[in-house]
Image 1 (tube, one colour):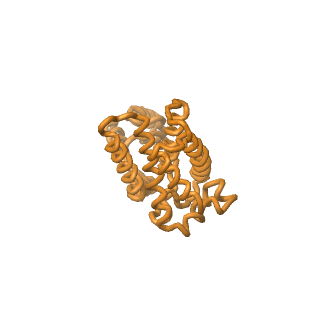
Image 2 (cartoon, one colour; image 1 turned 90 degrees about the horizontal axis):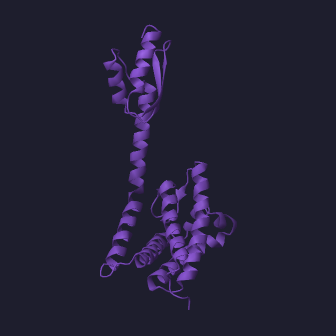
Length: 235
């Protein structure tokens, strides 16, 4: 680029690329800063079609590679969590295959969720409370809560699967998972680099949005069932 006309031409070419929200072109440094989600190859092609040569700066290329590697690593770490959710969902569907009812599916899903997740917490039971207290508000104040939490999950799981004390189980689910989710949200906002204790400490999972989503799904199911009112009486 040699003049203001060149800047205008390059800026126009970059702005026309899909995913570009804003394009700023600087003549003195002969560089451009792009805001958006456009692909680097598309940006380079647009500049070339406009009659100019371009390339991604070394610093930016390193950042792209770092972000890509980070996403790949995170996906690999979270694979066990996604796999468990898949098996729980399939199992709940199979349990209701003869006569599918959404309410029964939700109860079975929540029951299996609690049983499976409590199992992993018991695998390394002695280390779970300290890990859990890193983000759960109650466990931070009452260390004993971390010790009894896997037991609470097991009981809730059995209650949902046996369709016993459903009203109490739903209310407890909303309360304990709601509180834990608040702690998870705070950790994500603070970008705290801590381990998620959702599957205990046997599986080293990072605290991510997936942790927030899994709790949110359970809370939504519980609130749905409470508002719907279609549960057996409490005996």
